[in-house]
Length: 177
Image (cartoon, rainbow, N blue to C red; front, top):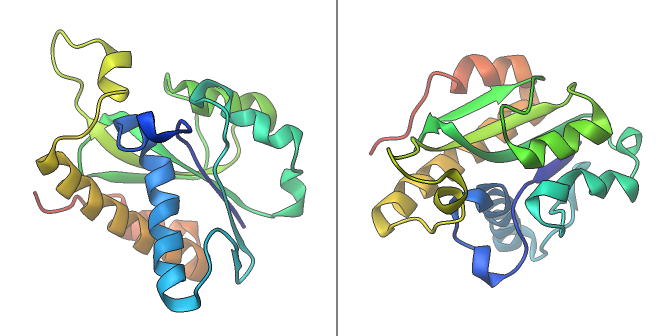
């Protein structure tokens, strides 16, 4: 199984709303590092990938790796249409205006699994680009950390029990604020 976290490379973007996919992979690697003493690596046929292009070119990772080599693919990314602290798991779908997902779809089609992590709502009179490239406040970061933990539990459920079970358990959940 291949888990692709979407974000933008470099320290300038590390804690921006658009980087929750990278933050998610960092959380997994951190948990593994504590237990297994290694970083981005393989654990029970689970591969973690951060495309190091900018978000809008995320799908280019599939110019270098063959998705057929990994079985299921899960793409993890931010979603401004979901409230901060909510996650949503889906088997397939459209890009919903997310340019990183649009790039992935241009390489894979729409049939891949997703874990969407809510960063919304977009405040009135706020530019979308400025919002997603803005950093979380300390309070928002606390909520995001809880959502990342919930997403990690969802991923473990997908791996161990399947995506249908994960959708039934986690799509109605929202972290405590």
